[in-house]
Length: 267
Image (cartoon, rainbow, N blue to C red):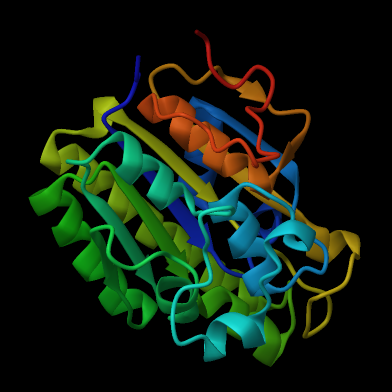
């Protein structure tokens, strides 16, 4: 039996766990009112397609085989029946579900997530995307909504990860997450929403793709009515699909190595 009618996953590209060096009030609130960790292990190599792929497909990047060039040049989404995204699992179990993916980095939408299964896909810069996301939440009340903001990663590449500009942009995206949560409140769905904020990877100096601590450890913040107030001791980005399907009462895929973090839910 599902415990939530809605799940929202806000992903901040390149944020790592650098929120610790800035204010990030929404991330801190989500952790304080729910569960979280600063030590969620991402995929190695810590590049975007590998990490977002694991977050949406529930397996390591060695299994899903995605990389940036592959999904950027793909003429059709790279998800397969053997390794589907969590969107496919929800659609198969919930034919009437409302599904959305709003991603600044377009290859997620068109090189990864399946076509033909009724996922609303939109792209754009972070600010305009946030505006559209808030309207979408209020008007459509989605069953599952995935969001990818890209400007924090851009600031890291341009100015350095952990730089003033990188941290400032992280605070801006934190405010976007707060606006999205407030849209849930306005829509009257916040009580039945599992709300999550995380990152795909961090960065070191002006790059990422290796296994330094700054690159491989990301934060995860999870808030909902059955979420324990706890610090999660062990979690990986590939665990998000198991969290999502559990919340919605949807079966896992048999090929997943995605697991519920111990102590996350009270039931």
